[in-house]
Figure 1: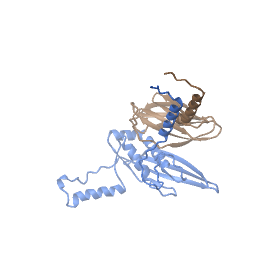
Figure 2 (figure 1 turned 60 degrees about the vertical axis):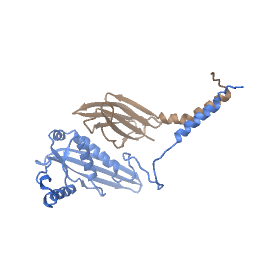
Figure 3 (figure 1 turned 45 degrees about the vertical axis):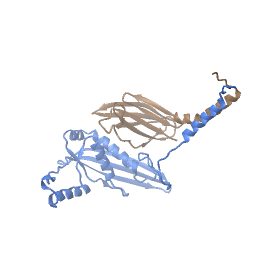
Figure 4 (figure 1 turned 90 degrees about the vertical axis):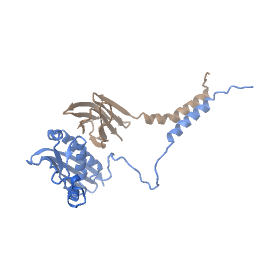
Length: 134
Length: 205
């Protein structure tokens, strides 16, 4: 069966795409990922894109996973961001309860380093989640 | 005469789009009641007032646990199955709150890592009451009752305090909290570890 698109069909097609576009836009929020050997950071932020994760380092010391992440702010104004870590085992299964979201200020045109140690010996991987709302 | 049905693209696309939109809007809510009560995220950042709140308690407990678990004393304590206890944290702020919220969370998180701790304070009364009930009330089979004099003392204890400085102007309130926690070897009184957590909260009035 051959489907032909006349002018009326194209108008309907455009209307249908516009109707469902917001759903796809919601699914694809502005998340960026930065990998590291032991895990990765996921950043969700507003459209300004002022906040970035400029570096991510992780190592195991004394059976504990230590992570450092540099958050950078490219705007001139200070920004409040929220973050938390998820602690996982080698298979990616969570080995610790949900952490509280923590606020942190990243000053304008500056970097702020998050430096944490895993709260459990079972953690071998991590996921850092950073939210940068308006 | 049989007529082959014509493929109607307009109708098909509209039906597909409508179905997708309606699927997205469909909700099935297993709730009851119309009082406007709702559940929130217990891990969300709480900014209702500048008073010490859930986020502050959670951040303090988390930092103290992460600090303690790194210390050689705690790691040895886990290996040798020695015991820890927490003395009541002194509340030196002008607000009332139960400081056991902090020490209980720290102890619970340490226990998940293998730390054994003993009870004290309010819990001790329940413990001694139960020991007496089993041994002195005459109600229990002595051969199967727990024995008095077998409780074990802790090698280390946690102690600390929380203080605040509050500054107010006509249009601004600024509160600074500082929590200090120490790990003390009970026999010697030596402070083996200590850490602090600072929190600043401001609100326009």
